[in-house]
Length: 306
Image 1 (cartoon, rainbow, N blue to C red):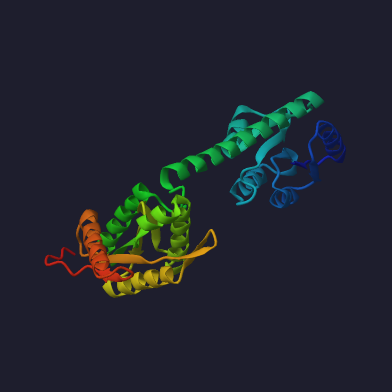
Image 2 (cartoon, one colour):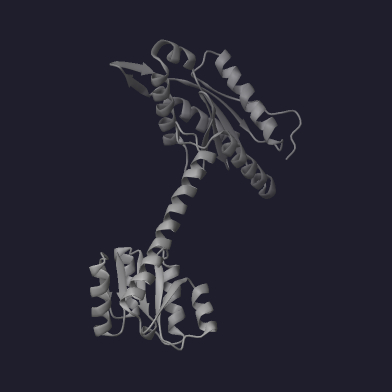
């Protein structure tokens, strides 16, 4: 898809004919505003813009509007210029986001070459974005649950803790462990275990606030980060997480598998992240020792450092 914005009807007709003949779908417009609107509507790969549509100062506004638009900014811009294009103007346009220039009068072959080159560059840029997103997912995301992996959720904890210390705000964490998970794998197989982990993930997400963060520490253990949550709020959140999972069942090979979790939570008292997690982990072990399917908080430490 290509948007052609040119002041001359005859030139538009010629460019459209040539580009259509080599397989491009062309949307013709005759003004700067129409060019921006067409880019928003059609999301083209390339926009061919006649410099004559803009005055000297307006040209900058047009390019800025195209590159600053949330929908149109990825479109490759080929600016149709006159033979008197100088170096300073060319460099300025390139720095504002122009991909290439078509200097008129231009032959059919040059027209196609410039458009094809801009199109290929745009496609490569899109592929690079996709590859970067895939790489980011591999680095930061747990592949089974789609949650943050251990490394990333602990990095997030460090950032939240730093902010809480700087601004004097509360923070809490909750470690969630699926009860008797090994028996699920032993009795029903790892496929059933994966379904249980996915169901627990969904249940936990349903009870967390938008600002909370959830990650998988490994195995059947999850970590919830609760910014701006004091001890009372953490206790309420932990119990809500436990109760939501307890209402969850997993269907596997005609059977309904019940799921419960134990939750250990701790409110931050000024200690390092490792100590905060240790306190939450101790509370988790206490919940397990008390019979599982319960949420237990870490007692206040003797030496608060806030």
